[in-house]
Image 1: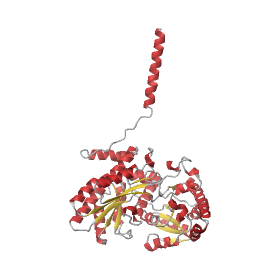
Image 2: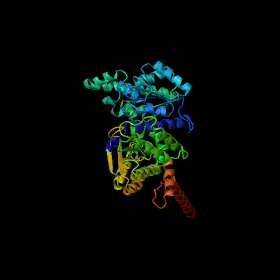
Image 3: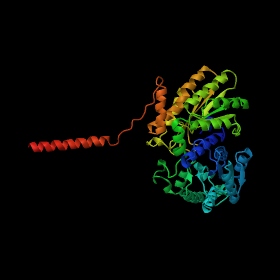
Image 4: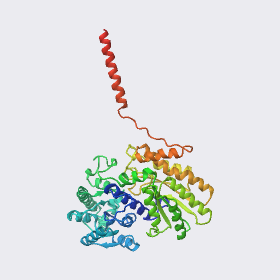
Length: 480
């Protein structure tokens, strides 16, 4: 999705999103104070690949403890060599001794379990281990193509079986998903908070024959019994306020340019403004220390519309002065207005329009008209082809006044179009954001606000009319 818009910056992007998701999950589900981290809290999940590999790093940045299952040893080694996971073991007794020590000391710790996620779930169930937060990031958008390895066989055996007996592989996948679902149910009944991470895990379980995972057994597009992380966390806490994954690439490839842009961005955020800005300030402050760059000299920073415009204008001014080289601005598809998907980005839009691609298409068209360097409209990615639609952009900052004008017109549009859609869906926080924008921009524009209809209005009018008619008929009879 972002690669389609030439803005893929490696797993750094999802590290920030996962960091924010974990912190806010702790606040939402566990009542952790806004200014505290996840010290002593256990997060259990799976996947250390291209995107899922962010989980171990994110949980440590958030101050918590993470046990992440991974069946591909090469993926584990990559994350360990990269410094994104702290310990490796295939011994679950050893792993949970480490977990207990980290709980007692409240020390951040990430552990790669070299094994299958189903075996990890089974262990915590059978040993009555407390797990506060949990998710899954196996590649379930390609569940029968090797994105998910069933617990009955090894990773290599799975690859061979795909070649030699694909139907047998599919049967094993379905059996494994069913077992995993049952184990997760046990743990959620014990108090674990589980959410879908937008990887189509719950849809895969449904397709495996477990219709009870859907809220409505004949229509999984209407949601599942476990929330999507967008539905409960990222949607209301970030997207509905306009906060999303703003990002930039230093086209010079110069490390010093990245350092300077980090400083400019950090100076543009007021950590006292709200909890979102405090989290984002801490993120950008520690970004270099956390060794997040993979490949391009790039950075991601969750920011709202006002901050994105402010940061972009300051970047362009710095380019104009010759302080830094040219910058490519963009964002993740997974943003306020960039993607329509009832399985993820629009899962907290409940007015019936969550299955429509209108937001992504409007975003794409509006960005094209407003002068972005390039725009992209694509299908698939993340949750899979046919399950989402994405609009993206890129804007080269060359220091010109022309680009200043594009920043002011296009970047704000890119965010506020999504706020309008979310407000029309009657999302309380988006309505508040749209209302405040109208007040602050009275002479510039206006976002149409929804007026909530009284569902009983027509019925009351009809009832009143019928009662009046009956009275009139009665009066006529009396006169006769």
